[in-house]
Image (cartoon, rainbow, N blue to C red; front, top):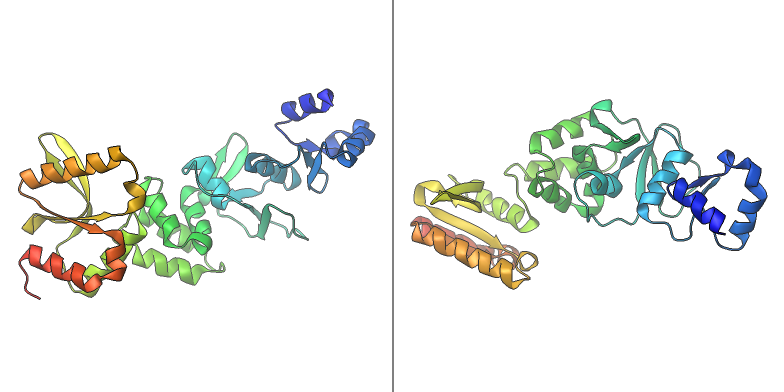
Length: 285
């Protein structure tokens, strides 16, 4: 057994049967005993393989495949992206289904492929588009907030991959992201401001005070009004809460009116949110 453990380590967790015909009987013995598991036809690993092992197994199974979706995001720009299934783009159809894998027959434009250490990976822009059917606007928000992509890059990737399933949803969410939200609550606030006909606002706006630059969610520079969308997920620690309170205090001391809006209020109390914003802007309802 130690020999197979050493062999697995030397092969990065993946054993390809065709490369080890001389020990085929031993491989079969380990499979029967549960010491190895068949990940894909002719591709073996230790039981319960991690997603990285499944990625390498897919590459051995279909050389030249393009790693997409959550696996591509984790490899290139979102290290803690939730992942259940390793998504692969392949040129030729893969018959059957295999647990932990999703094979999609399609050609990926070279412009949207990143070659890294011999691995072909969907670019950040393409991986964001891959994630949209499962994650909705959150995929776009994560890509923008983490600085992995810009909106024009997402539109370029969208145009290069026309004809895909779910492209209607992708187009809708890309259009809804034209003001570059960093969260679903910000997306909803942008939508609310546009529907109310409010203009003159900027998103992710930099304000410099005593040499320190703060990025605020939404700013009306002419009226010196700042809107911050406060979600619980970003203020779960005492340090995060304290940091934001100091930021609001410094903005206030510099004669900016700061409106911390609870994220849930954007959907639960939109009329009250608009009334508060209009009041701060000096605009009667």
